[in-house]
Image 1 (cartoon, rainbow, N blue to C red):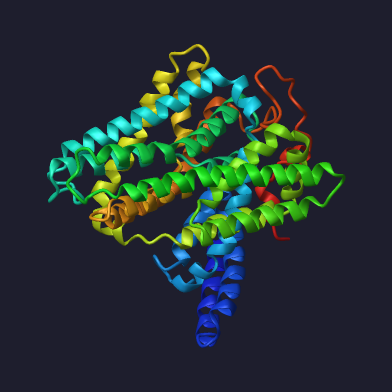
Image 2 (image 1 turned 45 degrees about the vertical axis):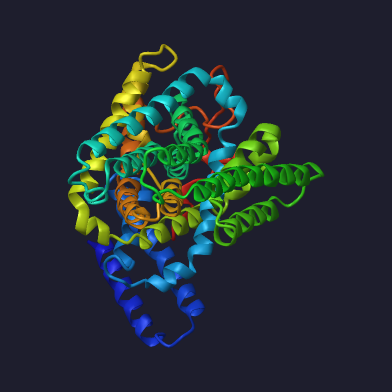
Length: 459
């Protein structure tokens, strides 16, 4: 009850501050909103922990409640002004995910990872596409469209259903101190999917041109999306190479590298319309592959500020959700979310037929792949440009889908880790299939250079 009273008092204070500073510049109000969200994130994280839920869930739900979607204690223009800071924080989390899964580790567990990744891409894509196409006569986005256009919509939703979130995944794994082979496999699958689905959407857009109505598909938009996707990977590799060279020159300041990486990725997201998280993900994979010691140094430095980074990223993300579409189309949202979850489950079970993936891991893997975030939203933004006739409506629908799955995804991954017994244990980074486990130590992930979310505890 004390925590609820604290939230109410904090909300009343924020409402009073908004009334007093109503005529202040946007930058001042955004700074006030950021401080308010940080304090609220701590309270939300504590409430989630007491409910035995991941703190990420508390961050997202508190942001959703305090943002324009409900209480409007943080206004829409303030959330927009905080977008650059949130993009920078998301980039740091994506870098952690990428550097935790270097190419050598992917090759070590190649059979299990590739089979699980393929199954959880192909099966959701096929199931969501076929079911959406079968109800196209009643589906809001296709009800007045010819069959060719309906097929394009269904395939696009199928590709978006194939995406998962490496950012949410690594956040939950580090909070739960999950270090075993299941955690490594799930994180590796999400990284592979993040890197692959952009190209898959471009293939769908180009193929849709064959059967869609004249003018319904902009091939130039598909080419632009493919160029941005490839450019993000190239930019990330270049950023990783520069960071590696800088750190190899001596004991340079790792903080400067992290600030520069976050700044570059946020600028790429805002100015060049490139997915900043994808840039950071590629930079992390490159640095973790060619310079693992330097990548460990960066993760150790990031551990010092992990709590605020995660709190800002996910609380601002929750505040930015606009749920008007969810209120209008909630039966269809529930249908698509349910279809995707079922498809992930049976895709993981099919992957479990291979001896490379244990039956217990196959039965739990689908729970760890539910989360979606920026990658799915980026795919929806690209689809909006490629399909001008219905792209805006599709993007609004995807925002509602992502909001639901970003909230329930961390809970699913937590239960998966409980099921396979990996809440703590062998280290996530630097431990291949045959590696000897490193001691977790009293500091948990911080000893290994991995961030922990409980840094945000306020005494």
